[in-house]
Length: 307
Length: 263
Image (cartoon, rainbow over the protein chains, first blue to last red):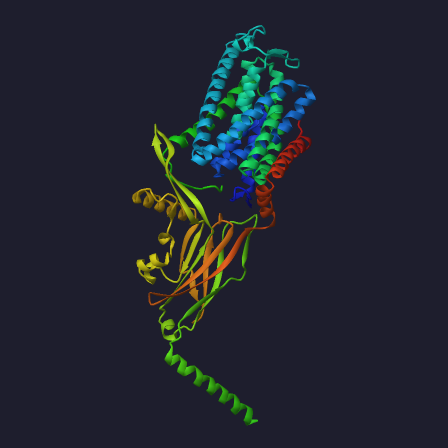
């Protein structure tokens, strides 16, 4: 069944989009990530113009994050104060990102920049996760007790000034890295159409030493607002948010997410992380191939001024 | 009874008498008219391209020329003009990057041609150029005329090729058929991604390879109710549209959890 997307201005298949949303939703529920980093490249592979894929991806991320945050709120695994500070940084980063986005679009380098960012970030995060999870799998198979992180361990981040106490996270840390992290994620959110969970989660755990149980809920909480802000700014400055497209993805996504979360409970942590790492790497490699392989069409058209 | 009949015969004779000398003095020139059954086409949710039929007629065709099939008609449906940037990818450090570009002004977004016969059989290339008729003869106006002619030519060719590849520039040979001596029907292709806006339909009449006359009509292509409303709101009330998109996402997320909750 075909449907005409009013903003993307092309006809697409409804079931392909619903299935795409459901598949990504399933994975995001399973791994506890928003899924924006999968949706946006998939939409680009499906010939949706990258500018629209990014803005609509940000819109779709809100739905899956709201769905996830509700269950974390129920369990009390959410640090509102930490989320709030991250959000303050996120708004600043996102605003900057929108300007860079519009500038690159005028230059004609937006598609390249989006692809490069995806390849570099997904490649790095996927690679690190794979190494870490394979090591963990080997360690448990070898029978060695997993190395426990000492809670007293501090790095340079903990020596910065302007400290603030985050009770729910049992954390006393400078606001500078928290704001910086939020700003970085906000920037990526507006350029890549991602919530940024796949960077936020490891950064909170490894850099700020936030307890793992509050990380996902807090990350999702701040992603809702950063994505909402990104969506709003894309809608007003670029008019690239396609609600019909976003709705189809969300509808598939929220359904898939709940089943994915259930499936995720049956897998062990290291296995989950290894699988997610492979998935992330696969997307990065697919995008990298497109950058290096001679494209079928060397020439491309774009409307000046108009989308 | 015989009287009225005689009168009508007389009138007819008079009319003929009036018509015959005028034809002898000034030969009637052929004309062409086209009519659209509708002046607007709506693109609905399921739109995947369509054929648009345009009817037209020849005025005062010479029966002898018509019988010999020496009248040719070319019908063009031209989309709204917009500025376009053509970019070329080149390899830099192994990565394909958009390097050179050329901007053009007033490029027709779409250009569908229907003809009675292959273009090269109707008239000579020079006439097409003078009429700026046919996708390969459309003049593409570069935004910066200072660029080298070779570059402009290369990017113009690429622009035409890309437009043809996406179905926006199309040619339907045999798409114009004569239904009678002076009535014809033209079928032009609307691509799935046909641009919205005011399209111009033009019909060109050729007689034995000579251009005789041109006639045009306008056609509005727009998105139908729902799609059109969304598009309009997104552009005119973009802030409210953004708020709506966010609310829809939040509501969907919340409902999705209620409906599909598994924990």
